[in-house]
Image (cartoon, rainbow, N blue to C red; front, side, top):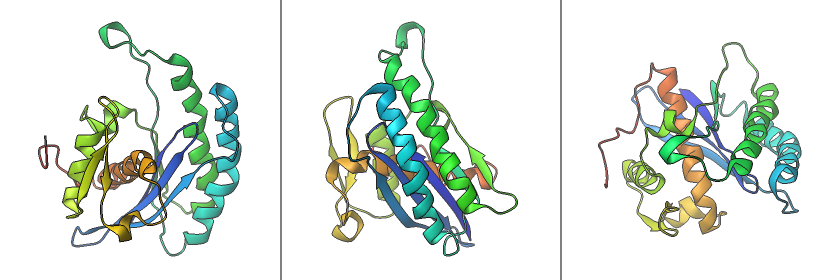
Length: 206
């Protein structure tokens, strides 16, 4: 079995997901969590609060399940500031997310441990290949034969699974981050196997 831990860092709701792949190539979501500090702050203060929260709660989560799901790669989405025609508009929010990505890794590497553990912090372009969030997430849920619905406004849409057993314990809005955490874990599994993506870009809705 291969196990990958993916993190979608956010200033207010950071999501983590562990996904497994067996010898036959079957994929399974093993565990998911959303980390949300009790006090909502902004900018660098929000980043500092999230980092502190992850250092306790993310470490506790992984430590509780590390023997059940022995993770071989940790993936936390990195950040990238664009210039030119597609210039990044909110530089402050993007730069504030950098430490959160690092905190996801720093909090969980000691808990996972083990020789051969890999860590990756890909930029959004690296792991999404430019596919919009709601399209990418919809393809992912379709791969698992999971009914889904698209939520959010234009330019900020995401896919939410519809099966109650999948959604239980999470709010609708949290799936914006959970879906990407699962996607990052899938990307991690692909890196363990030489870059062959479990979810082909051409599959699913367009």
